[in-house]
Image: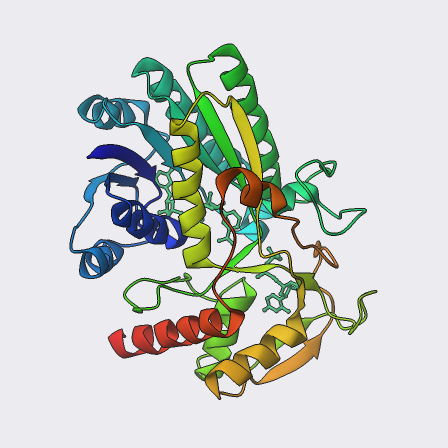
Length: 339
Ligand code: NAD
Ligand code: UDP
């Protein structure tokens, strides 16, 4: 079996990707410092796939620990690099923490790939690199805008660091995946998103408000220049997103492709209110909400043109929104029971 090193693999997107990789018969080695996750996800992955990935607890910013792990798995065919801090607001308050963690970890990953001649990298980028786009939907060629937070900057700079490294080391190829808004959980409810404290993101907040953990959802802004006045995003099922990582890896293994960039979205924009209504329709559960002022830094509307991923990776988002929302709710009910 071919080995893949997955940094940040006990986290939300990493754990679903580990399932997708194992289903595609890859051997998964997870490196994570558990700063925003726990090892329960390893048990969940095992219950879904029958196999528990190897887990090495380490901080990717620690080069000696990284070298030990990569030395042990020097025959890996690729690295999928998820490990990063991702709270936008926190990144504004603690920029150095974000630059050190997200860029330090990435530089170590690239160093190790060079040292051990590991040929393929998949990097978690984000739609945040497009800032406030001038045209919708955004393609990969839509000009990038200055990032509005240090977190966003780590994605822009991260993409640049990888591009320069691949240019200088043609034996390495890389795929930059720009995620739109991943939501939902594995249909089995064995793994899902576990936000720490009060959620920043809409989907976990909707679930917690529906479950009565939060009194109500604050809907940020109803006066945007959009059809219903609410912000628009492209919400993509987490399992679809996970499968794209396998497709990206396989594509790199099929030839020499240098650097590739793909948007991962559904191609459909959904307003906050539409998502609330779709959630209520899919689950039969009411979401208490209040209209609130705009949240600073929010982009009014963004959604993907994901044609390139369809054409080159033969990947596209498939899971219907109501199934995704039902999976998010099943997972919410399950974690309530565990508490
Ligand atoms: P997550 O917090 O659930 O997973 C990230 C994992 O990385 C966590 O398990 C955390 O413990 C680990 N980690 C962080 N710093 C580390 C370090 N220095 N060493 C080792 N492990 C470390 O987040 P996620 O939602 O799964 O996000 C995965 C990646 O996707 C991140 O790079 C994130 O920026 C990116 N991304 C996420 C979203 C989203 O909406 N979830 C959108 C765009 C991009
Ligand atoms: N949002 C909201 N209430 C919340 C959290 C988010 O109305 O408690 C809105 C937010 O303004 C944005 C959308 O939901 O329009 C998605 O926000 P999220 O933080 O999930 O993702 P991002 O801003 O990164 O696209």
